[in-house]
Image 1 (cartoon, rainbow, N blue to C red):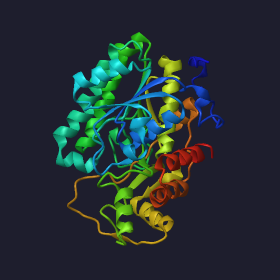
Image 2 (cartoon, rainbow, N blue to C red; image 1 turned 120 degrees about the vertical axis):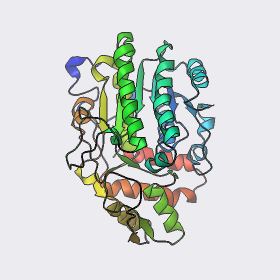
Image 3 (cartoon, rainbow, N blue to C red; image 1 turned 30 degrees about the vertical axis):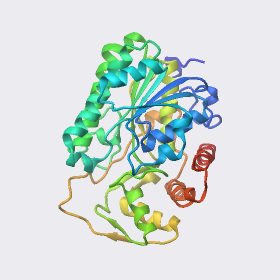
Image 4 (cartoon, rainbow, N blue to C red; image 1 turned 90 degrees about the horizontal axis):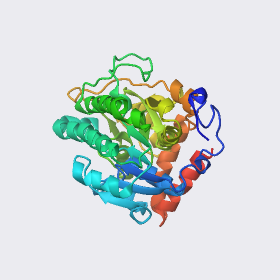
Length: 372
């Protein structure tokens, strides 16, 4: 069933529909899907979910870093086609895309850390901007491609420091190299969409998600993996920016939005080719200190020490997203409360190591959370 312009305000699923969210009513079954950044935190969760939906998944990414074992722990190299490569290598990327011949592309590959962008600004800008250009340029010449979802970030907005939630029509910008690179990726994507893809009837959209938490993230300088590492060693959680307010959401919330967006782009490219926010309700707008204290609660022990570093690189104090458009036009909405998101996250770190089958453990969590 195609979703034309007349259906835009409800999306393919309808504004309140939950039935079939886990299966997407069979849409992804046998679809050829290509995921860049497949070995990363969000990429690994997305690839696993797609294999559960019986999609024919191909991934393109750097080999997993030693400190990021999720892709390997989930056994994904045995259940999908994985291409090892860098998105800045246009030749290798195009070859992989041509061989995979996908119908839907999810571009997640990026340098994803604000603090790392201060240490390596040139690499961050090159990966996040040129990598996006390379994906879009390669897709232009691949006739099988029908929909492209470019994942950016809530930090792509020109942050004024106001409490108001940012809407998709608000100005883009970024004081730190990471935020600036993602704002540029948004502009690049819009340019390719308007200049090339819409004329080819290929759906192209950007997805801006809030601060994502969930099991299996082991990236340095992120609050959840840092906190879990400290708690495991019976050390207090030390916070450098405890009063910063962020839109915390479980990883499966934005991923469900990406999958819904991919389906609707495939069915109605003109209606859904734009930018989309995926963030939590007001309940998820909490300080870093709130999150750390809740992690301790569900871990069962631990303490929090606030030691704000006034010489640390600039990070925005508050960030919030307006998700009205996604709720009305896609029928997407967050299902997990802040408490539930933290509980599911801590449970993964606490209990996944107790089982010999982390893949099944994670699949069970996907099934449970998406059928709430």
